[in-house]
Image 1: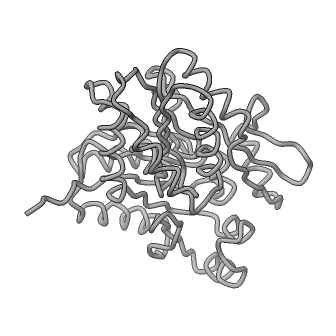
Image 2: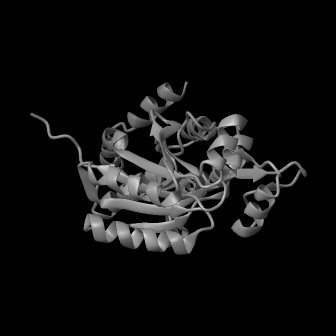
Image 3: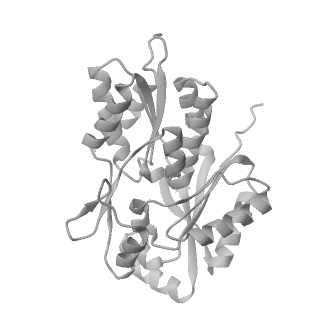
Length: 304
């Protein structure tokens, strides 16, 4: 179903004059909220809760320190996808302004949000004369956020919705994020790591680095100590054919370290980091606090 829907969105044009369009995404792509507001990038909320029946994500939210205090206190947090009613409201707000939509969504392998957004888009295109293109990023956090940034930069340069869609689809395999997790017990409670491995890893000061592979979060490498893990992420990126215009750093309630790490990244790679941002709490349910991510994009392979 998702694949069929995406193809339909890609061929939705029928020769009519292209309208203005809005770049949209969901909160799990971790783009900078200030940048999103300034650029009129619309962010679809996702949700999280503990076992007390309170759902957070729209008007009701926890601050990162309060959230991670509860997490480290032993509570398990649960993440939830997009609310179809809220997606429809945000879509309709743009369509009512005669703007089409391109929406880059968190990996369908990790969340049901992509399918939800596709279904809402399909319903709206049945009801009215509009075009909504939904892209499965097969990625998350700032790796998908950099896709959103690229889409917006292309839009500002005058590219059409179709040109943006084609570029993101062709290049999305080039985006990745290396994510250093500092608290293994959060991975254990979230079902990403078994209890024995978590206990042993904590004793040995093991810091796993995760990344996305075919849309799924998988282990990349394990390091002894956080400094070694930070260095491993940077050395890994150095070996890639890096697009130096697309690098970002994210963190979980760890801004000062993120700033310091971004400065090291900029100096050693000779680049300027696009943004430093807090990871949203729906992803934070799995990573816990003090995590650090380095997102990047490699240059497209040259055709013979």
